[in-house]
Length: 196
Image 1 (tube, rainbow, N blue to C red):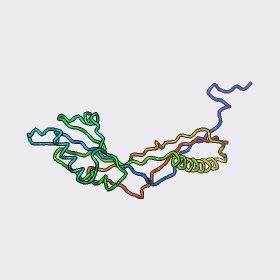
Image 2: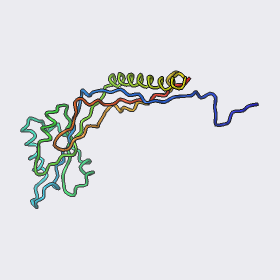
Image 3: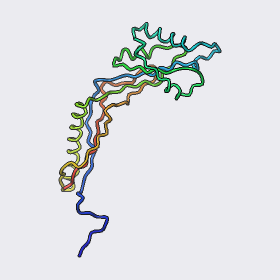
Image 4: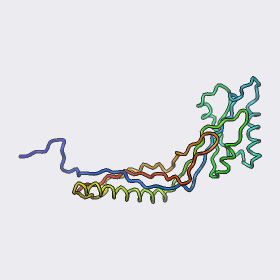
């Protein structure tokens, strides 16, 4: 009697795993600026109260027609920066490129900017549309590989979606955002097919 090795099972199908990708252009960018206001940025020995520094910064912001209520304070993020002197950090998000650039342009003696980012958030409908296209790309690739081995692909056994739904990969320095409006983001999925 011919027995199978304990490491070989005849009930597990042969498979082929490929990555499929489609691409998309962002149409709903959100820009984020991190504004740090700190006594650590003041190099002379004058002891200026932090509230005065905040007033100076936000007077310049409001003179541009931007509401200071749009800035969300994050004291914990400031503490994580390990500055030795008092200060705070504000997050500002906008979908307006013009407003984003205005905020980047505001400088005071005690303010600094952390690297700015832009992100795009995919709606569930857009994610579904892109995932479907990426799976179709994976199927085409898998069929090509299988045919090269005189085989065929069967049903899908597993799908892994690598797109988190929110993409952060546009970065800038503190003066401008290097963003190419024609850049296309990849939407990748890994698909495992039965190999017949």
